[in-house]
Length: 212
Image (cartoon, helix red, strand yellow):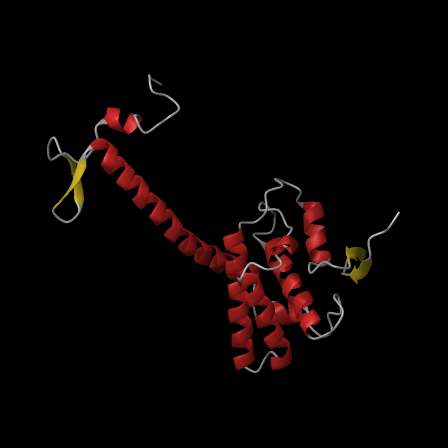
């Protein structure tokens, strides 16, 4: 029987064996163990938005001469990969967690650090060369980066929501005889009212044609 290859990582609590292939690290594993709440993963849009925040922070820290460009460049490259949807299977924390998003923030920090180490041709977990806290999370707080990422994700998802609402509006208009009037405000063809006939709206619902 084959055994999975692992690496040993340490924190202030102790040691843990981490899968050798994993970009996440010991803080992520502890979060998964501590908060097995829903089994629902973090939304993809929030993950990519968080990666964008980390990229911006790394660029800023390099411009301020606080982060060495050799380290900052690989963090930016790793973040750009995450923004394109790569390595999402290494983002394993639950969508519901304690600590106002600390687990989510550390999962991202560890992924970017370990991917950065690969780009530096170093071993995963060799955090002297690229550290999740000291380098990836430099000058940041969970209370800053997570709310910022949430706002970015909400803005990006709103585009999809608005497109869906426009399709729904068109469907209502077609099914209820609504025509456009004035500055685009709809009105039923039978009169200048601002609502669709209730029976027409009900006809759009396939689950109940006869009553509620």
